[in-house]
Length: 372
Image (cartoon, rainbow, N blue to C red; front, side, top):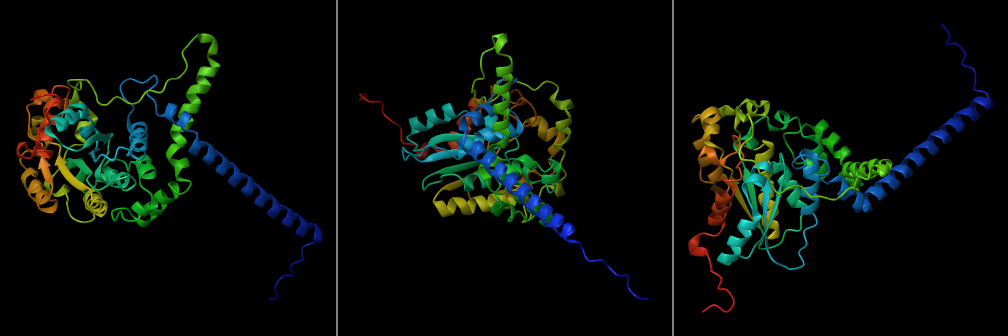
């Protein structure tokens, strides 16, 4: 059976095809130029970005991504002109709520400790994010990184348990970090890498830039209402509440359930690998890493731990990381829920950290000027 004859395209059809190709090329070129223009504006207009990271019209402090944007921006722009070594407190909301940097700094100065204290903690600030954030920081010899950890960070299904936290993965982790996360499949690594591809500043600042622009646009529309213009307000350093209402019944409390076999410290667990990588970063730059266990409330042990995995966990962690310490337990009165220290427990825990970092025998008391 002979094949049917295919008519040759006419000159008009060939011209239409070439015209369509040129049109597609122009559309792509225009789209690229617009993307580069918007990316440039977002990258350099820090004013609107800071308004977008603000706490305007919000109860409490910015949660989730907004808080993360604020903290990472501060981490990547620490002023080191004084050449003073820093102690960076890294971690999640447990670290944010537990440590009062003013108390810690005052105690350090009294004991002659060299560090200036910086707290860089935000909700879900797990070791994998602390590692990627620290790798992009201006770490120097003499600095000390204090990483707060908890059992939950080392659950075998941590990434899926917390929904993948894509905003954090895209914002903090660069492609070079993502390629090292063994617990991520190849497709996931590529997807996150593409979402955080250059220009990096555009991806990191797009959301707060949009929020800041929206705040000013809304205010402009309401000029007649005598409302004050938007203000830049940083997140609160910590929460001031004594107890979270009905925390025992909250859905998020159910997510704290853990079985002994679900706590994993072997290679391949995303946060265990991240602590090892963070150790390498610190060693390469002459800094020192301390891993501090954020001891939860007594009711956590009664409801979730029940003597099942605590001691084996701490033995293995102490074997794996040389500088490891556990905060001393306190009564439930000093906690706002199962994990977070409250306003009354914060001074106690802050002084506990000082004792760990500068033991009494290592302190060099400072004498006030003019004292005999």
